[in-house]
Image (cartoon, rainbow, N blue to C red; front, side):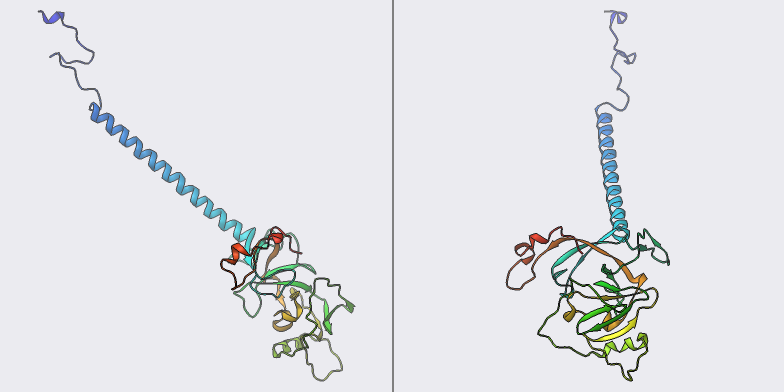
Length: 265
């Protein structure tokens, strides 16, 4: 048979044997598939990592400048806030300090009378306290028999709570008030928990009290709160439970369902 009469496959060499396709045949195809899968896995891992990074950055920004969660550990604000309440705190309303600077961003307004605020107290600057603003700059404050007087008039405080069976008490830490006392004929100033003043709130300072007046460590004892130390305003109770040693898993079994989502006023 003549070689001229043989049919030659495309790409065949003159000897009549079919040449190997580009890429090395089956082994080349396997290599391309393996490389493709590796690239896909790398792209997926990069997308996942970038998503995690974005979420982390967003969390830090929101926590730093917008809203933060806090837990109530004591009863100083009862019955407005209860032990076991978890709060969302609006940090934008009074402005958020920019770390490393003296500037604030996002301030909507200044703290006002009656606001419940989160702040760093002067005697424990590393901790967060929650109290109510009862005195703003230039206010004259005085308490007589548990009743608060502001600028000469009796303050309307429907939120204030008193334990009727508890007598008055004297605390040495209240002596700081002497430096802000309005001059009077009294030779010796002896403030007590339920009777003190009149004192004047200095510029850029605020006087705060707990709503549970007979069981609150507040400005009566450690002084005014600096404006720059006020961090935010509690917005809502997002979770609440009754902490007790009598029940196992109280955070699941002793939930205060009626308080969930309640606004803080």
